[in-house]
Image (cartoon, rainbow, N blue to C red; front, side, top):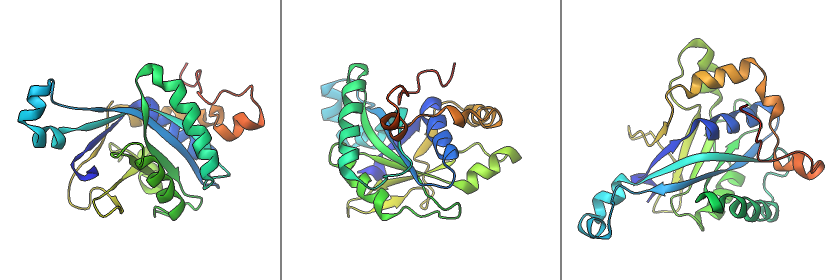
Length: 219
């Protein structure tokens, strides 16, 4: 199902997840992706007439991200609690959890590990087009050199065999940034050390005055 789906990441969601990873450079970090499924069909009749085409054109728009943890990455009970709170907050905006992001502890580790896959499987139960975004340090390092138009994350989606596979190996381009200038804005955030302001659920649990929604991050 994920093979036929496109994923579009907003500037806000994208920058928040990268800054979260940069704040905790020597730890694994993770978070949730919020968004909605967009369908090219505009009516029930059109959907019935062109179901296959509509499925192929389906796009998951990732409009926000919620930083979760930089310590207890693999604890599903903590994830379940976070899922409930996040879903309740964003339901009024018509958003749901559509995926998960992850950054590995080791800078040279470019593989999607078992903990990330397990959490991805958990979210897949609720949203069958779930995406997992893995931070790609090689692409991140290329940004200041002017080589970065693509997202600095790698997309994984689950195929019919229930295996998480990296997109792009077949030449497809399933992942895109909604705003073409997102990497330029990201560089500005990095140069101003904006990552210091990121708050995740771990921070909030340690000090409830810290807001995991990060409302003032881009002001």
